[in-house]
Image (cartoon, rainbow, N blue to C red; front, side, top):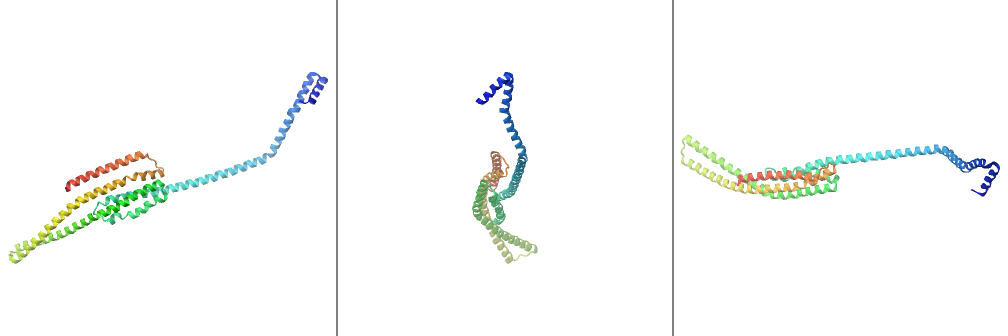
Length: 308
């Protein structure tokens, strides 16, 4: 409180007494302290009311801009979601075809043991399947591409090796067929001469020269047939042993390549969000492979016992 204000207060006390002075003091303090603040706030309120339309307009503008941003974000997100769904759908289509093609490519290995199939028949779908499998390199993850490439590389090298080993079996098969065809021709001649002898007997023809010719011819054909039978038996014995060994090898390669399949399947399932516990899948897969080996070994043992 300033000296001037103190003088004014004492002047009030002398003129109006203590009670009057207190009342005046209250009024004085109200005027001094409250009124200026009130007037100041009043001025602010007036200013706020004057600016309310401008502020409201800015708020509405911000809300509109915000709504546009939200809509743009929503639209962009929808576009991204649609793109992701299309990509996932494309991947699923490619992977389904690729897995089928890989399965057929694996079966090529086991089909090599079927000597009644030509190499062209065995590999006829291989080129087409290779194209389907190659699409994985376009859409696949690093893990999937690596797993598929490793598996197909093993199939390719195995096919070449098995194809080369198969040549000797196929050539021996041809030799057996040729020998059997010749043996059958000699057998037909034997049957013809026997029928001629029956006809001569029926006619009562005992022409010595004719009978001698027929007997000599019959003996020649019989000797030729018997020699071919010995040759054929020897060829079959070798063929059966080597074919069984080849069959064991082809199925061994088949099981080795099959062991690479889980990595492909698990990687594909991960990309397509078809989750499965890797250990559970491996347990199921390994059990099936073990069962397949057991069935195959039983088959081989039975066949080996028959041809021994």
